[in-house]
Length: 182
Image (cartoon, rainbow, N blue to C red; front, side, top):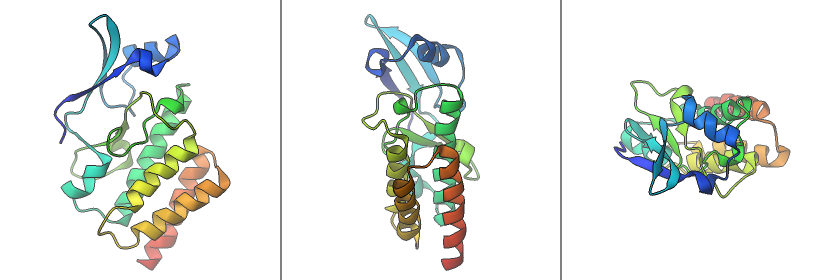
C-alpha cells in the first residue's frame, strides 16, 4: 500500500475554473481523496494514497483471476463515465496503471473500488486510455487467458472507437466469451 500523497500542480492541469472548484469543494467518488493547497505560491492538488495501491501492484497483493481483471477494467470505465457525467475533462483522467490508477484495499474486489488521479496525462483520447489500461491488465502474468481475452477487448475497442457505455457492454460481452474458454 502507498502511504504518501501525490502532488499535481493546478497550473499543469490547465483546468477551467469550474473543474478546479469541483475538485476543491466536492468529494468526487471516482478520485483518490484530494485536497487543494497553496504551497510556495502555487496551487497544487494533493492526493492521499493511504489505503490504496496502484493498479499494477494489485496482482502482487492478492490473487487475481480473469474475472477480477474485468472488474478492474469496468471500474476504470466507470471512473471515466462519472467524470464525464460531472462535465469534467476526461483528458485529465490518468491512464497509467503504475502511477494514476489505484484500487482501494478491501475484502472483496469490486469496480467501485477503482480510483483515479485527475491531472495532466499524455493521452487525451478516451479510447486510447481505455485500451492502454486493458493492455496493462492483459500483460498481467500468471492469469490464464488474460492476454487473449483483454487483448480481444482492446482490439475491438480500437476498431470501433466506441462510447463509454459501449465499452462497458463490450467488456461484459468479452468477459462472458472468455469465461467459457477458461
